[in-house]
Amino acid sequence: MCCFSRPVDSVSATKIFTRAENAHRQFMAYSMTVSAKEDLAMILPVPVRAGSGEKAITFISLEEYPQFFADLEKGFPPPPPPKPMWGVKSPASAPAVPLLAVVQVGSFEASFVPTISDFVRLDERFRLPAGTWEKLPAYRHYGFAVFKLKPGAKTVHPMAFSFPRSNIASLFFPTVHIHDGKVHERAGFDHLLYCQRAESDVTRLTDWRESPQLARDFVKAGQTKGMVAPDRHCYRKALRGQLENRDVWV
Image 1 (cartoon, rainbow, N blue to C red):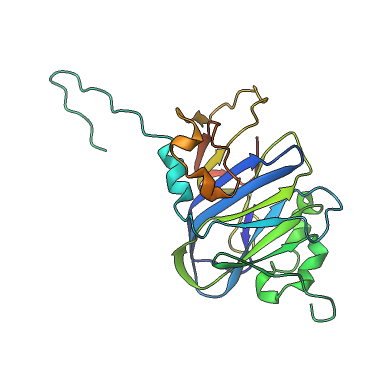
Image 2 (cartoon, rainbow, N blue to C red):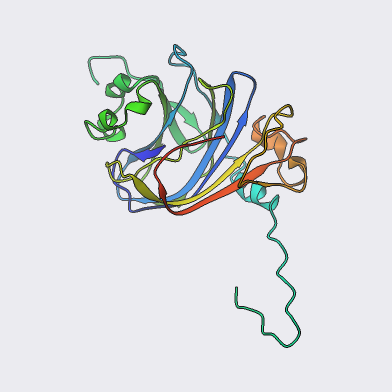
């Protein structure tokens, strides 16, 4: 799920990368283009292991590698155009409780909210409207990574972190939308999802494209602070158009 604490004018070009850090933790990097008129927060619910506490998330700054997703995309060159047939024309192209810790992660301020009830410990501008979470019972046991954004139109550098995952068998992509304070059954998607898998995982990823090369051939893995495994392939899937408003598990 990607949700915002205040209305936004537009959100597009969302990109998400995930990889299992180990058997119990998952890496995630998230980027998008957003336009808003006021201070707000982007909130990412994450399925953290129960009882993980306020320091469960480790935030990772990718401020010095803003082209991370552009490099990832280099691993998936477009297929060559079909050769035209002879004589045929080619087609055209809360004050009373202790506040949550705030950390500086590159150009963002970020916090981890361990439970829904802990949102009262954030500034009101960075919470969802009252009653929103009651409409989303599936997230009652999640934790929440909160990134505070400034007004204006911008493409934000990747927001990244790792977390102790409750489901060690699958990778989680937060793709549910709440952009206007409401939960819609269907939503407009403009997402590119990327992942790397464990070497022992031999199950087939249907509808995903595998990079022809290893990650080290197109990503500066050393600048990802361990997020990208240089000796593995990457996988990519596009989600575009009006789709069911739900998260993705792989």
